[in-house]
Image (cartoon, rainbow, N blue to C red):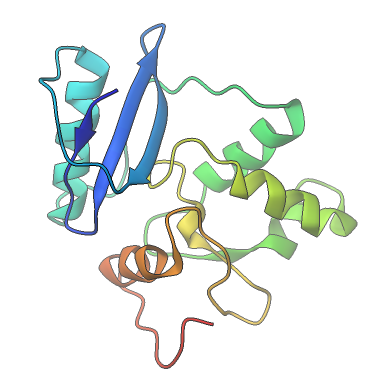
Length: 154
């Protein structure tokens, strides 16, 4: 699984059956030559995103998980660049307003960070909450997309 660098940290990417299957932040150092076309495209699109030249991603994505997790991840995927939503709003869109914690757990299990933009999901009070890559990365991604946050991350 190749590791690439980005302005906010190193990223592990992997593919399975011609689809991007993982994109996670890691402390490991970048390594290896990328030969897989999906991963080459992913690296290129991420570079464009971090340069401010790309707002949408276009690569095949392969998702495991449960039916509920996939529904949550697809809802997250529909959040436009530069906009945010809340866990509550996602649970309402899925027709189960009481499922806020389940939505949070599904978002926490997102295997394809940045591209399935769970960094765009905030707490109901607008605060930054939970992010598998760390709240500093969530804040950096949101600021890159035009959000300015004041004060503490917590």
